[in-house]
Image (cartoon, rainbow, N blue to C red; front, side):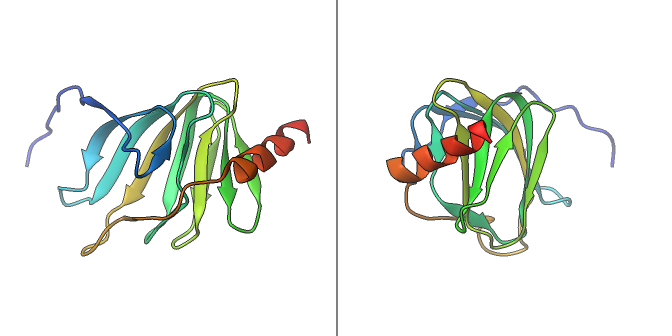
Amino acid sequence: MAMEKRGIPTTTRGPADWFTGDVHVENFATGADASRLVAAHVRFTPGARTNWHSHGLGQTLHCTSGTGFVVTRDGVVQVLRPGETVWTPPGEEHWHGATLDTMLCHDALLVAPETGDATTWLEPVTDEQYAAAHRALDS
């Protein structure tokens, strides 16, 4: 097997079934090879966010620019800034997204399971849940 250079990924809009607001995704690893790595560069416009979701084998989020949140069901809020990384363990329900006045760009990395879906998508984050995350910016 030899090294392979892949082309520039296509930018797609994040589906409304999974996101609130304008989200743009560039998948650069699809889990189709032996590593099963799934990786995407994701850009959230101000106010945009994921639905609640979980990953069977966990997820790593690495912020490349902007400011945002990663929030768990039990109310833990991690503020995510450039250069910072957050790991969500397998099965932990969470959401992530931009603040009201800044974009958030992050790389999302996970390992696809041998069978089944890597992500379980759930209901949208309410405006109240989103507003509550902003209180962490002041602490």
